[in-house]
Amino acid sequence: AAFDAGVRIARGDYICLLDSDDVFLPHKLARVAQRIAGLGHPPGLLLCHDLVIEDMTGEAAGHRTWFEMMGIRRERDALTIDEVVTRFPFSNPCGIVASRPDVQAFFDSFPVWAFLRGTDMIMCHAMVMRIGVVHHLHECLGTYRVHGGNELASFVDGRYSPRLDLRPRMPGALRFLEQWVDILELAPDRRASALAYVRRLEHINRMPSQSHRLAEPLVSVVLFA
Image (cartoon, rainbow, N blue to C red; front, side, top):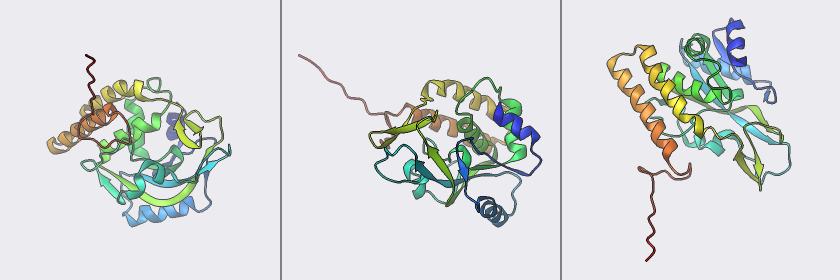
């Protein structure tokens, strides 16, 4: 509901999200504007930039950026909907930049009560399906602060550990994304790509771990005689 209210007040062509406990670096907007200009000011845009992860708890074993932690560092500057194969090739909210009309179209179709936490996750998936591409800006232009009171995650034994498990909500998210394909009224080839994207997303979330890049889930069978 907070995202929705902010987008409805905004009047610019592009939206930069910022959670209340994170920080934009001073040059963030200038660098984002330069990248948008370099892309030709596209009417539809989903751009994700890297973030410094600031450990305010003193428990982290090492200093990493968001792109390093999520495996985005090895991705190209742009991925089409047919190339996105990871669980979450996006940034944290303070690293997300999107075209306002496309974000507004999402909120016009998405009931605000359906996903009270982690709305940016399903929004990013919906934006890729609508626009067809996600752009990566491999620069740290914001700070994601882990302070111990985050809803999303914390550090456990020196390792970044998700605190909010969104997997139980994936069935509902997948149902919405299937309906979103119909709402978008895409051309046949774009529709096929969008549906294939939903199926890949479903498959990835059935996999046993983010660390296992398997074509099929791994099943072990043990027989006791």
